[in-house]
Length: 283
Image 1 (tube, helix red, strand yellow):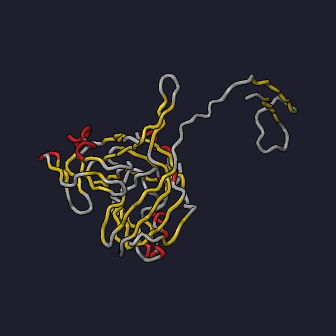
Image 2: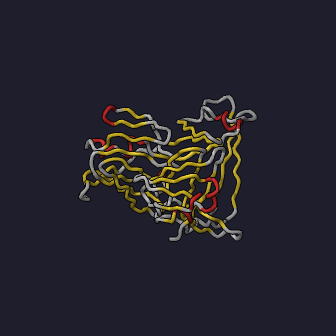
């Protein structure tokens, strides 16, 4: 790439984006050398992911990168397409985390929290209303709850949940079976080697807070619960699926037995134990 860059200092003028100048206007032209730019060949393709809901209670999880959703399709219990949202609204959220706390903010107005031991994450996500907009219009969704007990009640146009966390699943009660087919990219990280080569590591992060929470399985494929949690097993008290089946590491008992894409799980962690692990998977 070759070209020129122009730097302009302005003062006492009407240009709205003026910078500090030295009187009048001075232009500087800098010649740039020819250079090659490697745009990279590493990319992650969009795929389709299914979240299946049932008549009754179910934990719903997200086995894809929520920030990359481009289409939400609503299929009835027989798999027949009912409606499509090809332009789901994404919002930028600021997520502040601290041991024992999980606080979602819509703006960065509370950035002072960072100085008090909080960690900031900024990412794109869906609102719970956007995710369930299509089945809501068909009166299929009764209530959705997060791990704190905050609720989304479409019948009353009440949304106490707001944005969906990439780390948590949702507890949903529906009046019929249906499927949401999501077009998005898999959870992944771009890994750069010492020599500059890029590669894709598929998988995602799981966060555990002390006490009860609802775990999101971030991978496309199923995995044995005991193997997936082996690195933090000493802090895990119990894991439950939506049917009440449990994994209790203290007794080496696994009745679940697998983390399944599109499903969420309840987990209880020992007091004062916070974990943050990355779960990788093969293509």
